[in-house]
Amino acid sequence: MLSRTPPMGFNTWNTFGENISDKVIRETADVMVETGLLDAGYNYLVIDDCWSLRERDPETNKIVPDPVKFPDGMKAVSDYVHSKGLKFGMYSCAGTRTCADYPGSFDHEFLDAKTFAEYGADFLKYDFCYKPQSANGPLLYRKMGMALKACGREILFSACNWGCDEVSTWIRSTGAHMFRSTGDINDNFRSFKDIAMSQIDNLAYSGVGCFNDIDMLICGMYGDGNVANGGCTDEEYKTHFALWCMFSSPLMLGSDLRKLKDQPFILNLIKNKNLIRINQDEESRPAFAVNGVKERITFAKHLSNNEIAIMFANLSDSDGCCELFFDELGVPASSGYGLEMKDCFTNQTMVKKEYFRHFLKAHSCEVYICKLVK
Ligand code: GLA
Image 1 (cartoon, rainbow, N blue to C red):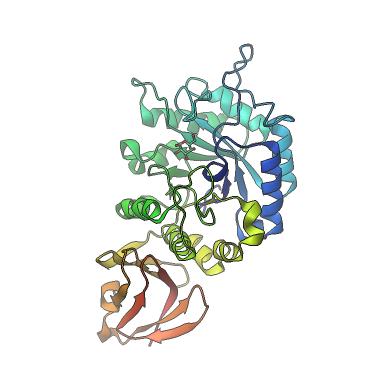
Image 2: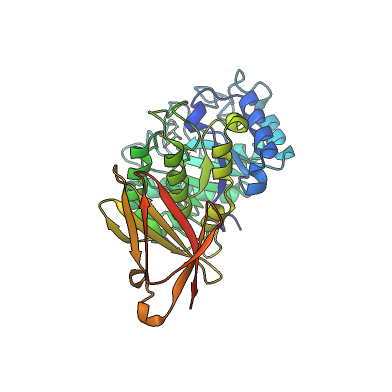
C-alpha cells in the first residue's frame, strides 16, 4: 500500500526551480544516502517542473526530456536514483501547460502515465496550471488517477491543485495519495505560518492513504534558492518542521541537500526521530488546536500506544507564555492523572499535573510526546 503514512523525500522546486539537471539529481541522491536521510525515511527523490522540452515530440506525441539538462534521458536518472535505494518522482500538470509553461498532460493523461512508467517513476506530482476553463477540475484528477492505474507500475499520485474546488472533500476519491491544499510556500516565517494556520480546519480530511500536503519544506534554505524570500532563523525552521510533523503533512525536503554537511542544525532537525515518529504515527490521527491566545497555540495529536503529542507554538511576534490546562485536553484534575512529557528536542522527561506553562520566544516552539500517569 502506498501512503500508509505521510510520504517523505525531496523535491527540486524550492531550491532549483528550472536549474535542474542529471548532475543535481545524482548528487542529491548521493547526499540523501550519505547523510542518513534515506535511513530516516526520506525515500522519494522528485523532479519538479522544467524537466522537458517546450513541445511534445510531433511524431510520438510524448513529452521529451530536455537533452541539455538530462543528456542520458530520464530512465538513466531514474536507474541511478533506484541504484541508491531511493524512489524516483516526476512532475506534470492537469492543464495544457505546466506552471512554468512546459507541456501539460491535459488530454494526454494515459500516454504520459505510460511514459512515466517507462522511466521507472514511483511518484507523480500533478499540478493545476493552464486548466481549460471548460474542464472539470475533479475530473482531471480522476483521469490521471485512472491513467496511473493503467500504466503498469505502482505510482504514488501527488495532487497539487492548491486547495481549489474544496479539494479536501473529494481528492481521496480520485486515487490520490497526497494533495496540496494551499498556495506555494516561500522561505520565510509568515509564509509557513499562514499555510499551517489555513489548514487547521481541514486536518481531519488527511489520513492513511491520502495526506494533506502543506507544501515542500524550506528548512535550511536560509534565503537562497527558487522560493527564497528573506529566509528563516534556526528557531523558525524548527517551528516549521514541527508544525509539518504535527499536521501529518508529507515531508518533502526543499533545500539544497548538498549543503547539509555544513548545516548540522538542519540535518539534526530533519532527522529528529521524535518528530518523525509523530509525523509517521501509524494511526495518522489529525492534530487539533487545543487552545490559542494571541497566536500562542497548543496543538495535540493522539498517537498509537496510548501516547499523545503536544506542541506549544508561539506564532506571535512577541515573546510570551504558552499554557495548557490539561482539562482542555480531556484530562481533568479530578481524574488524578497527569502527563509524563518527553521533550522531543532534548529527550528529557518530566511529570506535570493539571497544567503546563512555559515561556516561549516569538516564533519558537516546544514539542512533547506524552503519556498519562498517576
Ligand atoms: C506550482 C506548484 C509548485 C511548483 C510549481 C512549478 O506553483 O504549486 O509547487 O510545482 O508550480 O512550476
